[in-house]
Amino acid sequence: MSAPEQKKEDFAGQKMIVLPERIINQLVNNDITRYLYVTDIGYFPEAGGHFRQRSQGSMSNILIYCTNGSGWVSVDGKRETMTKDAFCFIPAGMPHTYAADRDDPWTIYWVHFSGEHAGRTLLDDDSSRTFAENQFGENSSRDQSGNISPVNHTEAIVLGDQASSKPQKEPSGNTLSYNQANKITVGAPAGSTTADSNRMVPPGKGVVRQSFLDAAGKAARIRLFEGIYQALASEYAEKNLEYASMVLHHFLGSFTHEQQFAGAGEPRYEDLTSRAIAYMKQHLYKKIGLEEIANHCGTSVSHFCLRFKSSTSHTPVEYLNNLRIQQACQLLDLTTLKISEISEQLGFSDPFYFSRVFKKSIGQSPKEYRKQKSG
View 1 (cartoon, one colour):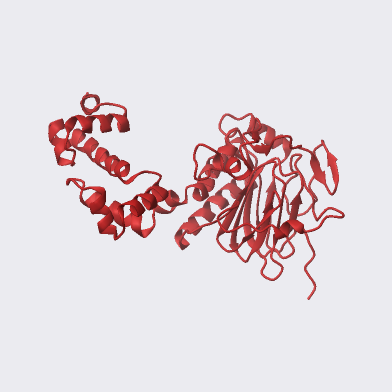
View 2 (cartoon, one colour; view 1 turned 30 degrees about the horizontal axis):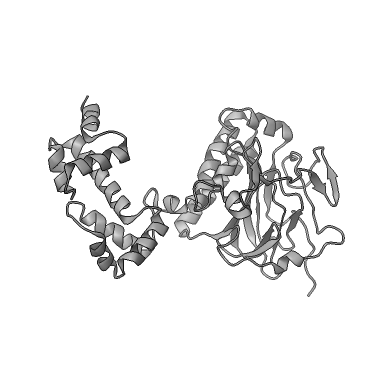
C-alpha cells in the first residue's frame, strides 16, 4: 500500500484560521491582547499525509493536541510519538517537524500563539524556568514577544529551501486569511533525510505530554477551543479579538494546569497524596506528625515525603500548615476565639510559632488580620 501524499492542510472536515498581519498588529498594540494572542488556529480530523517541517522554527509558539489516532513530532532533532490524548508545546524559534502516522493518522486541534507573556505559558516542573529553557538549556534567549529561541538562531522565513525576510501569503483553501511572515517547509527539504526519527526520546522526557482528563474535562477543553475559533471566525472586531485572547489563557491553562482545570480548583493527585491530604483535613484539630500520616498511607516517612513533594510541590508539613492557616482565617473571621485558643485548636503547640507561620503565609499577623477584617 503506497504512503499517502504529504501535505500541510486540505483535509476533509478541517477548519483553520490564519490571522492577517494587519490583525496581528492590532493584537500587539491592544493592552488586553498584547500579552497572549492567537496567530493561527485549526482542527485537522484524520489528517492522513499531514506533514510539516520548519527548519528555522516558527515565529509563534505552537500547541498540538491529539484527540485520536497517532503521529510524531521532532523538536530540535529529537523525535517523539504522539497518541490519543497527548499534547505538546513547541517553543518559537525551535526547528521542528511533525507528521501524522501513516496507518492511523491523528486528529489534532492546534494553536499558534504569541505575545509578551507567551513564553511563560510553557512552564515545566521548575516554575522558575520556562518549559523551553528546561528543554533546550539555559543558553536560550527571549524576544520582545516573550518567545524562546536558541542563541544565534536565525529568524528567517523558510519556503522550501529558500529564506526570505518578507511576509508570504498562505495558499488558498479553507483558510480565512493569510498569515504573518513565519512560514515553512511543506515537505522535507531537497537532499534531507529522516535521520532525526532515529533519535527517539523516552515518554515524558521531551516536549510530548499525556493528558488525563475524563470525558467531561475533554469536552470542556474543546468548548474553549471552539470559543476561540468562533470568536475569530465571525469577524475581527476588537471585542472578538479580546475575548479570544481571554479564552486562550484558559485553554492553554487546561494543559499547563490540568489538575486545577480538572478539579475546578481541587487538584487531583495520585492515590498516596490524596489519602494523605484527606487525612490531614480530617485531623486539622489534632496534633499529627509525619510518621502518623505516612503510616496511614502505608509507606515510610522518607518515601512519603518524596512522593508528596513531587505531587504537590510542598512538603507535607508546609501543606498541613497551609490547610490550618486557611482554617485559622475562618476562625478569626467568624468567631471571637482568642488567638491562643485558635492556635491550640489547630494543633500548634506554641502560639508564637503559630503567629510566625500565619504571617509567613498571609503576610500579616493573626492580630493584624482580625483587626483588618473587623475594621
